[in-house]
Amino acid sequence: GLVGGIPANGTSTNVLDRWIVSRTHEMLRDVTLGYKNYELDKATRPLADLIDDLSVWYLRRSRDRIKSDDKADRDLVLGTLRYVLKTLALAMAPVMPFYAEYLFLRVREGSDSESVHLMRWPEEGEIDVELFKEMKNAREVVTQGMELRQKAGLKVRQPLASIEVTTNLSPELVQSVKDELNVKTILITVDSTANTSGI
Image (cartoon, rainbow, N blue to C red):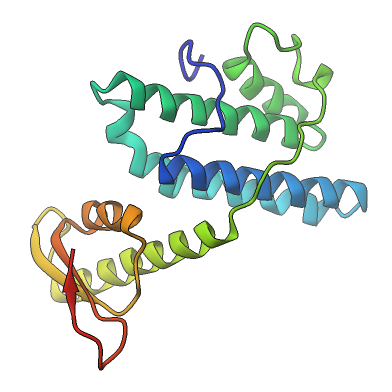
């Protein structure tokens, strides 16, 4: 399977895991509503959006955790990944039956049905809107930082001492932003009168 013998688990407290699980719940809510209303465009668009978030951000930021010697954290990320991929397979089954079956068989667990098409529809879970806002801020800082690096001709592999941002970043996400931008310190200035603080 894609995630070894690690059971599906959507309860990790790691900020990236919590975010992708919440995004999965949001996808499931929107897909379910689209199917119920016979609006296939609204039912399928969230699938692509989740796949994009999963590959472009979650897996990029989780690579080191997956390869880590910290077994407990590695199990958390792999359990989260299995949970997300299984839910994604179930949600896409009505419109992409063959790929959904392929994906499901790669993440299937012993107690699951032998086919994605024999499984119950997954239950909707909690959606953390506040965490979505925090992650959006962090990703915008990364995007802007990458654009500034490009304009200045500074490649990502060249470490920077610091960057100054005017977006208030969640402390949990600061390290992800530092790693993406290869910068040692982030100076946050929320408004022109506030003091700049470095983290």
